[in-house]
Amino acid sequence: MIDIESLRVRLYRQLADEGRVAAPSEIATELGVTATDVTAALDVLHRDRHLVLDSHGEIELAHPFGTRDFGFSVKSSTVLWWGGCAWDAFAIPHLVPDSSPALIATTCPSCGSALAWNVDRDRPPFGAGVAHFLVPMAHVWDDVIHACENQRIFCSEACIDAWLERTQQPRGAVFGLDRLWRLASDWYTGRLDHGYRRREPLEAAAYFRDAGLTGAFWGN
Image 1 (spheres, rainbow, N blue to C red):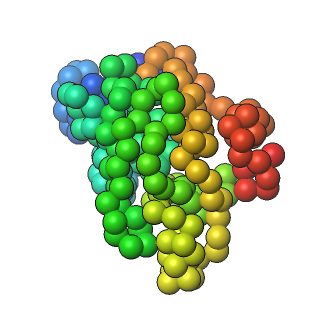
Image 2: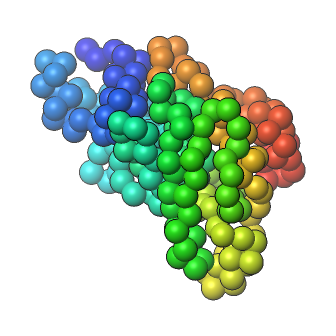
Image 3: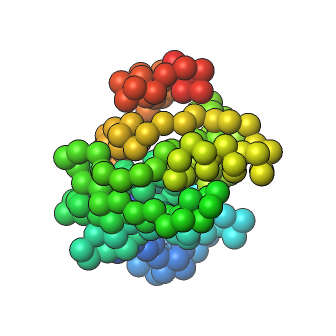
């Protein structure tokens, strides 16, 4: 029998320490259980929204970590991670011990220009960039991969407008890097430890409000 919470912590700590996660077959060998046992445990973590599995049952997201390119690289002095989105990329230096400051890099979805910032725990980063989140918070888990792929940073509001016109997408939430940094700062606190509890919707709405993000998009 696999202890689900211990498995969750094991997966998250490997991602934090190494920027990668073992395949289900490796985990089965490590724990002395069957691959079916691991698959069932991962399905529970997926159901409870601690992980996002792809169509092959492999871990695609373990927020704030991606296991593939979601548009953001995050580099400390020792580890390179994929950030699951703009929010997640900015969260990693806050969550992972000894990762601050980290170099976060992406490209503008509109014009393709390279964007990068040194992000630490002490203050919002300097530099150009405007965040655009396409999917309202109440609907993120309708298709979490789509939502994460569309939490991006653009050069400017002009680039956002050009991208929205080209893609025929509705305008979402637009805000500066200072608020993105604040949004990311405590969202995942405790996630690497036993006993972590995801915020309920009302708690999340209050957290967004404290970060200066208000309105129907944020559910508050």
